[in-house]
Amino acid sequence: MSMSADVAPGIPTSSLLGPFAEPSATAAHFAARLAFETDPSDVAAAIEAGERVQLVDVRGHAAWNQGHAASAVHIPRAELLDRLDELDPALPTVVMCWGPACNGGAKAAHALTSAGWPVKELLGGFEYWAREGLPVESAEGHVHREVDPLTAPVPAAGSAAEGIRCDC
Image (cartoon, rainbow, N blue to C red):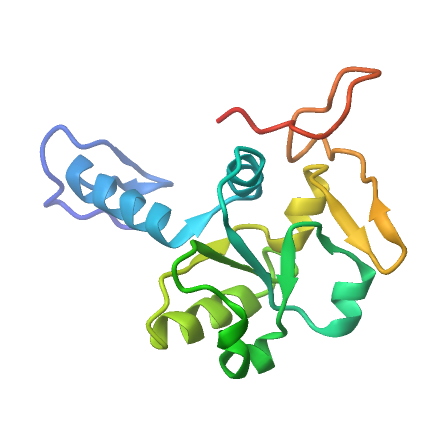
């Protein structure tokens, strides 16, 4: 990788990572990301604290029946713009799809924002909601999923997984 000679003094560079951005540009970048995205722990904490949040699962019917966030409403992405009357524009809206490799949440967020709705996308989608041990329901009812230790702290023996957050 060739390095640019016009990197500002005092800004670190790395032969493998390349130049680092100015702190003000980096701050603007991450502030923008936080305006567009949220994570399962933050949404679950907001709901647990009594905040009214519209968590919209835009996956298809088979995926929804297989399992979904207990607090989510189901509107498949293909039906989203035709069913806006089922959502409250005054509430914070968070869209989710399957997981990090699925862009259905981003497509739904784009459709909603193009229609004038403020919205955030749930990072990790349903996959990370479930892997963090957050409340999940399926066609059979409530499903208890163990916390994946790669996504969230594992609760101590005998304690409930509910309420566990990433602490970051």
